[in-house]
Amino acid sequence: MNENAKNPALKAILTKAVPAYSFTGVLADYIEDPAGEHGDTLAEFVVREASDVFDPDADDEANSLEIARALDMAVKQLEAVKEAIQSAVPPSNELTSPETALEDAFRKAAEERHAHDGDLEFDGGATVSLSENTSKGYQGAYVQGWKYIPMSDLSDAQRKRFKELLASDDPS
Image 1: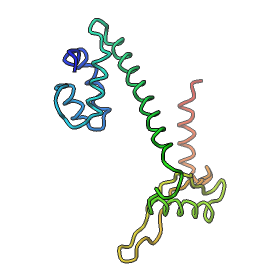
Image 2 (image 1 turned 45 degrees about the vertical axis):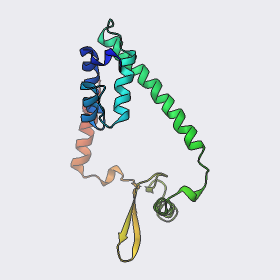
Image 3 (image 1 turned 30 degrees about the horizontal axis):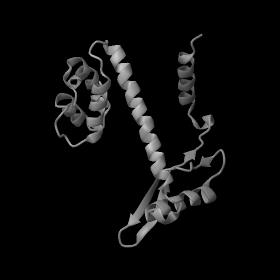
């Protein structure tokens, strides 16, 4: 790790990212102790990448933009690597788990047997919650769908409130 990692200005920039990181404590650990072993190589990467491009003579805005640019390049490289790895996987159902296949079957059944355009619709990636009876296995599933509700189903008070809300957003 280079000396930039200990720079207070870099630490201040990186600290702004702590709430956005899934494991906030770990990113904060690497910011405070960049050379330490904290068990999260992604957090370590973020700190390393930032310290590599950090310029102690530049202002915070320039450094923030440069760090963001470097991380954006890393994201693009990771996406390319991910796509290359995924393309190596044969397009067969051998790699599909039984639960995934069952969820797909419930989505298809929902679309074929229960969907009505403009009334009840199901997206291709709709959430499926399998309903399991421990003694009998899977008994069914809940499939997330879209149910159309016309304005006429709202009460008079609800329609009035809706119109008031729309009017308050009107800039004229």
